[in-house]
Amino acid sequence: MAKLGRDLPSERYGSWKTVYSRFSNWRDTERFSSIFQDLHKEPDFENLSIDSTSVRAHQHSAGAKKRKRTGNPSTHWGESWRKTTTIHTVVTGLRNALAFLLTGGQVYDSVPATALFQGIEIAGSRILGDKAYGSESFRTCLIARQASFIIPPKANGRSPWNVDWDLCKERHLVECFFNKRKHFRRIAKRYDK
Image 1 (cartoon, rainbow, N blue to C red):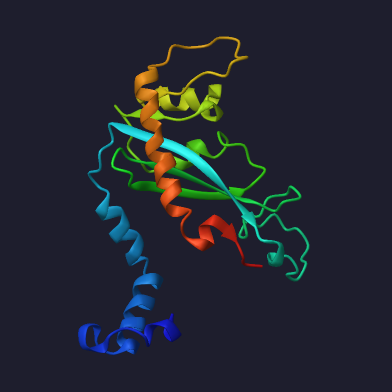
Image 2: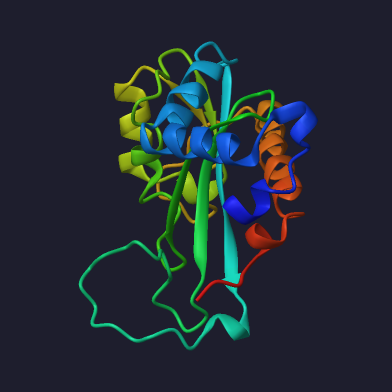
């Protein structure tokens, strides 16, 4: 950041060192988190869409120093041979993200879904998702938190439920959200070791 900060127009922002110091201070005191939380205090919670996207590692991202597995998920690399990362997110009806979660690529979509909604008041909301989020435990969690779900059942499900297919089409908002984010090189493919 310090190197990039020197490119800032000093007439408008002042000294690059002041900008960097303020950025570092806000980062360290978690002010960015509080600003992000304040910006989405009253979003449109009528329809919330949940989905995930996979980010493959580039072939040149291999070769980092090998370490023993300690169970530390800080890298969020998958255990499969492709070493993918999965980005899970919840999006409002205005395509604004409410929450993000990174997991390894081998983690099934419905596993981190309940953790994604922690801290979000979803009572009275409709949660839109694809068939991967149709697990019994996730649906039970949504009902317990007084939210409804618009998630199509799997074709081979034992007890299918009714779905409002017209409302289910609104799930494209989360797909559009990911499409815009995939224009950024670091989200489209993972280059870091």
